[in-house]
Length: 346
Image (cartoon, rainbow, N blue to C red; front, top):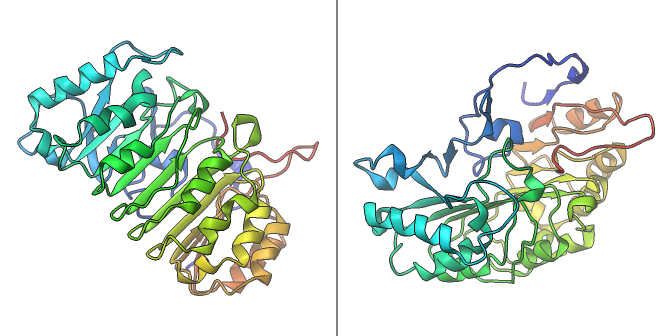
């Protein structure tokens, strides 16, 4: 059977249990946060990035430095003050590049107070980091910081300085900025946030990414900066700057019904293989819009996991898409006051 429906959310075992991360790469399909991040007694943390194990310099230099994702952080610990003068992050990066041939660094995960300054700092090292293809900004464990605490700046300089970058992932959205760009080689662009600014979403839609295959936005809620409206998605949904797009995720939105209605008539949908509208407050209204819109039978995967569909609507979606792997797991129930929560906010 290709589709999946799970209404057993209320029966989940709440006892502690270690859970490994899903072995699949989140840049090749759509996974919920708890699948991407391993959960154990140390907290919820991510162990792989861009298909590579994450490694700190203290763990030693392997014989193939290009086969790991290097974790770069400031050494001042975690807190609320940024590394305003770049010092800590700059020193840590210099330390790495003294021990490892810069040309052999293919993937970097940046965390700590310097995350907001990382795009500008990495841009300064572009002539040395000639093999860099993947960057993660805001690589911070849930047990240390809430996602809404992670500070960023303008990430545009990173894309401009690395025209051969293939993957960019950003966790957190406080202070996040992006200007429209043209980037010929980027294949994966992911934003994990509890509130993605509409200005960033519009900038993505105004950009040109000829090679982009996977685009994923956790839109979040307005309380944490997620002021994106359905109209802000117009550039993305037109598909004009995304000719190679295969997987589109517009996830984790408190306005998920409006997003679904916009997607139902979007030109970009006809060439997608996977579509995710999960993690948000999707109700029967949004599902009805999808069913009455353009055909979705060409999709390989439709991810609606974490939703508020009724027991009557969920089977209708499955019946309408018999050849599609539809994920309707984690059926939620609205609170007594009608409030519906998204998967990731704070």
